[in-house]
Picture 1 (tube, rainbow, N blue to C red):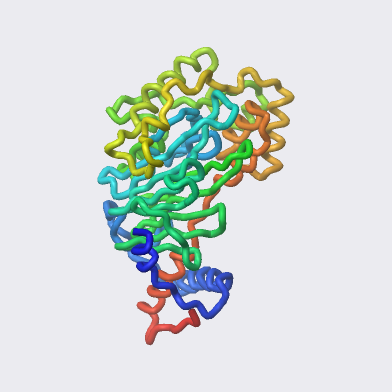
Picture 2: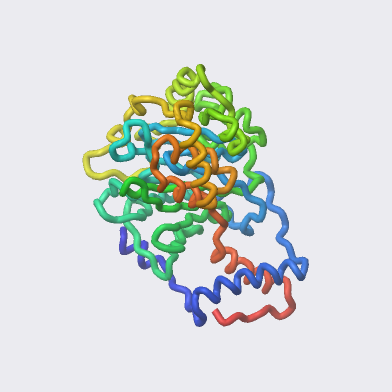
Length: 379
């Protein structure tokens, strides 16, 4: 199977350095803009498996840090659980992302993403920074480890996997919707920040831990059975200082334990995967049950017991690291509650941009389609 996928790849002949190719991609984007050449908008219900222009208006969801969930509609909550979950999927499931969360070493109440599995139309794509099926390979397609040629691996029937460097990867659907993956290191172990990026015309199509994406974050916490949980932040506002730093947070105080029980045991458990729907590859003898611990965490962590001094220090550290506002709550929580400054880097690395390479190829086609005689480029 591995040899089959290696033979499927037809390398592109590039006569200029890769860096110049990326610059040309950006140049072409500017050229199209100056010529007022724009792609026709796609129909609202186009398939993720249908080739179309790369979406220009996108929305991003995130599962980053230990882990923190930012829904497509912008709601934030912590989700320190252990197991395999549906992060998001389209209702017809030609776009699906499943996350495996495992305990942070020597931490009884913190977990992070150690693997991610995706359905890209008719194919399964997985990344394993821990518990790889063969004990060593990072990226898998349809149950076989893959190798990259020129930092790209095309998927049969469209789509591809791109490697920007050893820590940053992007999985692209034929439609141009994407999942950005960033490998982070916390407490000496590797974990993954997972950032699905979909066109805004996917509204009302998505479900899972990243919310229903209906344009209103108040109804983002809807279980698989349709039961809705009141959308309340899990980041307690312990001081006025933190309140200023985290304008989106909502206090939970004395009701927080009951709320966590609902969030983790009701809403969260509903999005645990079954073995039949799992997209993961497993080491011999293991199943999704092997990675499940419904008794985790031992306690629910909040910022209520953190001192003013530690909060201010955490805020300063996250600001110094360049963490953007929409990840500030998660960063402050991680650094203040755990004392681990490496979480600041994990938060700042949760920002993902749409990659250029795929756009470059399509822009070349679009320019040739609209300009008389076409244009030849040296790559």
